[in-house]
Image 1 (cartoon, each protein chain N blue to C red):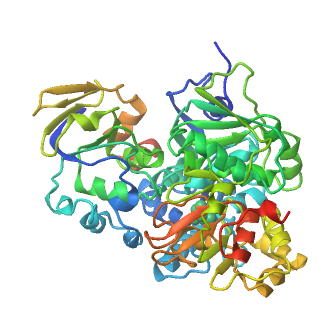
Image 2: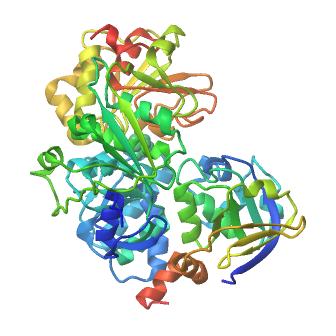
Image 3: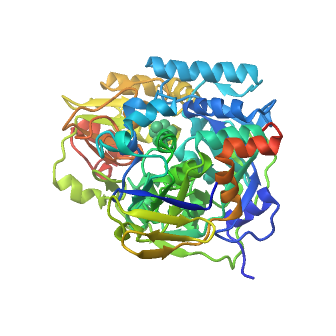
Length: 167
Length: 422
Ligand code: SF4
């Protein structure tokens, strides 16, 4: 993965839970490409149709809270999002994002720096998020090597393949 | 260098990395991995990883519990996938229908997690096993697949919170009331990414079942792990059932805690978590004054459906009937507990009073199997979550309390204080 990401921003507020990301009735769907059609169906209906690979979600507090279902980040990863940046994340959701190869970055108060449609630039190993549109910048501790390796590999599956020599 | 917390000690042992500091990433060897229905989602990534075998079949437990026996075709397929996978990869420790129970309870009562272990499970309440003096943490299916393939997991070393509990519980006040009180202060995000340690004379005096209740609900505080210090009570519980050797570890006396809270149990009254958050906690006397009528009462879940919980509730329910218009659902946490209830006559005691005594499963706890509530219905429950929609309709209301409190509530049809009859 390129450490430098750039994309159009979608904004979400505080406490967006995994139920809002993908409703409970879709939990028996396993195919991520099917799941992505239903992502945020009630919360942000145009998202599943209009979101482009490389787009970036900027969310508020405790993003991905609620039930620890992996369907939610799997649906986001299937869209090919560049990253999700949030004031804070729910723990298992954060891990699931990383393990699926989706960069998750915690930056306190980042939500207030962005409006929907702004362009964001993120550098994972240098540790900054820029709002290119509004000319603002925030910093975060650069992601540790272990996490960058998982993201680089495109997720934990590929990372393990490399380790096991099955790649 | 200051001393280490229990989380640091266990992660040091699991990773072989001396003196891990909070925020550092370590890769730890897993002592026990548990998968429930969500484990079925790990099969595809496991196959993609291309591992020729599961790292150690004797360290893997599969325990289906959410829909047991399968109540939807989707659930039936998940069970089928797990059965085929377990047969193909020679996983002998599969708790299937007939020898089933809530996954965390199955780990506990069969001695799968012992002091010093690093345990992982595909369920967010895996924290419950922290009561063993272990670092027990909930993980997603892709990382469960990686654990099956490699026996290892990456973890960020958490900072820790120390909870000091002192004083004696009064009549009608239980482990559930302690943890609700703790939640009222720590709140649902206060322990996020952190490990929580229970200390103090009250903690030391708790039985294993009570410790499970307290560790279980550290998940509601956002905690990564919720631990007790292993002691004689832990050893006694595990004496004849431990599946592998333990490595008891204790925090250093000069360990650094990010935060400390102290609670005095003397004079504390029973607590109730009111809709719609487990930290919206009030003393029961305030709630009782509002005459909250209930439609359903649930005595079950991994939080509070062990023998002591069911006996305590039965003691209050004995000789009474469920209030007219109320449904009382009792679901023991495991088949072993079910059988013990049968022996002690508790099943009859509940059903003759008009309760329904179900087979052991997650049951009404998560709103996906049975005991689902309709819009505007009110449920009093011994489970751990009361977010909107948790037990069915998002327009329903859930109150969380102790087994004794729900038993009296079932009899009276409105939220009631067990101290009145004890
Ligand atoms: S009983 Fe409830 S909280 Fe416990 S594992 Fe089952 S669904 Fe989760």
